[in-house]
Image 1 (cartoon, rainbow, N blue to C red):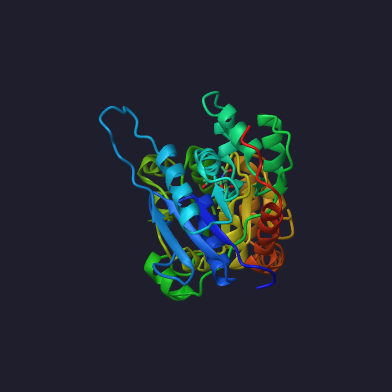
Image 2 (cartoon, rainbow, N blue to C red):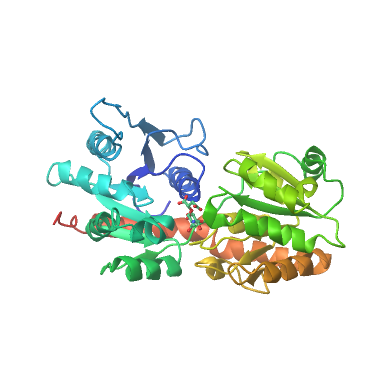
Length: 383
Ligand code: GMT
């Protein structure tokens, strides 16, 4: 590892979600490069290995006092952050997803002894700005935490610009894109396809938490539009409950073409068994699902919303359609399903772009440089 090693506290949502996945991957990569990494959260991030050198986990205990109608997480989190920062001489707290993590980190820094304050790095992932930033009950607190962070990063240029536009934040925001490191394959393509019972039919894959912004209604509509005259299956790798969508799938007559797997750990094995990705979101700051598919040589058809055009080069490493455009998505999907040679060529270009621009080797040094920069500077004043 070039340069010095850092002692980093990482806070993220530990359950299924792009920001938690990215934060866990970053922690793993930092530890691999010799840094000491301390995860501070209410649960161990689900993708984090059970035991790994230089990775530590500090759970935040939450007391459900009778007096509280709503249990509070921000204060116990900030106290734990300050405690871990003191006991392990952390150089910095790197929080993923601003709410409430950035506010808790600012408070932890303020509670630390003068001269021993950890620096605060906040990484914005999307809905912390695009959804909560618009909420009058959160917006001012988010702006405050961003202004008082020692550095702020966004996962795409689009998200940086949206943050400035929505929150009127007047401070530099570094763009550091997401990265992905595929785990070594566990089961072969043939084994996965046998498990799914899809035979030799082309397989379209969708990976998401199924929140409303992902537009699962549009996903199913796109499948229904594309099916006539074609034989293929849709695999939904769901980080959420698919049951609310079953009725629509039946109404559209596509239920027998859809296979669902919820909360799978071996995402890579399933994605590698697919031929095309399909993503229909109304908003996406980056879309980690597209990147996972690209790394596995699977080109995607997607709405070209938010930061997605920074990930996918339309026509070369995937195909983009307008937001909400079922006909456009279906035409693009049909074009790839009907042309296996184009699909393969696009998949190869996608994998090449993913490795060149969005690998750990390309991206993690940007965080290391940022850490060195913020540690060399004095902490940002609290007010
Ligand atoms: O997609 C979600 O709703 C989850 C959310 C999160 O913070 O976990 O995802 C956001 O962060 C991901 C990782 O940076 C990005 O890949 C997603 O595009 C982004 N989601 C949205 O902007 C809707």
